[in-house]
Image (tube, rainbow, N blue to C red; front, top):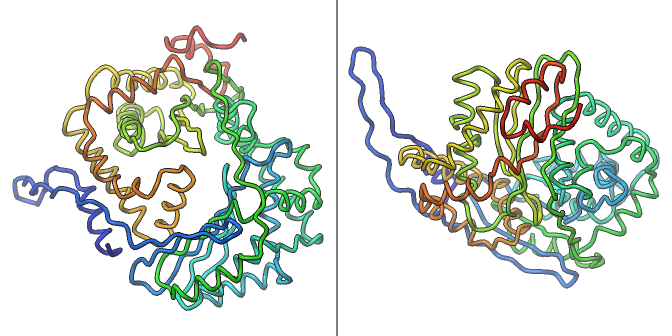
Length: 467
């Protein structure tokens, strides 16, 4: 399926039945959209090198460019007692490799028609490039150097650490980061994930270049690495470059298995910001890790997962309590949680929480009407197809199903699975997984004005911590 076809399909899928207006004319009802077509993946080749490096190649699109992504199963999960060592290591990997400085790497990437990007998540480190087709083998070689042979220049470690410390310091003043830190700590207690938002600055300051080198040596290797190449490229030359660039790398350890424990009880965190004109809230709970069911995803979309969701219409459009509320399911390796986010005017904190809870319980008590469910299906399928409409998007989705051991059929069957959703299955998901009485809550705001409001919210009033 071509990129153009994907985009046209997405447009059809996201179109909602409605009315059309023209000056001086009566409204006209547009014709109904066609049934969504199943999604067909491009031809995909997968294989492994002897040292455990996995490779996925997919010819895709018509633009003469290729997206290359090296995904290493090393992230904040591997931080252990040294929060953000994964972040510091990734930053230092960008400071030069195999004798080339950071500026040399940037110039090399630019000469290939792209740039070099390095990022860290909770579970993985990413090294990515999007380059001209003929440069794909050279890009593979550059990425191989960055991943395996970083120089870790001593002259750069203090500057890189200071930049990250500044990020921590600034984050500690931002209510959204403060709320995320506290809430994720309640979702993943006693786990490295809990320290990934705002790590202990004192512990981070103690990290040295030797710690970085030791972390890289202990965690990076072939068994944890997957190379994705998506787009237009010479397959024979790219395979040769991958073999040459990665075959001599040590296998290293297998991916770390460290699933977070499920919290014993929900937690309510009240964090005071005297004089704050708004409250930042996070409300949610752990939910099952991602699998082949999408009923909960649909329930999330109905509640707060897109701009026309129930909670957004209620507390933004109807009541003006907040500007941009939203909900989402956060998916980690072998763990997940659902949460509702909002920045609410201080005087409306209690009423807004009451409305959010009312919407959750409303979905649990009453089946969603057919027209709403049809709109949600169209939206979910449209977003899904759009995500796959680019080289980078396709590479990201292939990496997603590999991280979560879903199999390629997850992508092939998604559109059909969404079309098979029923009002009952969506309601059942909300009932089973979104019990408000089991939800944790974080509120960052002016507790002098907010706490009394929270005492009026029946679902949390008797669980508030003592003053």
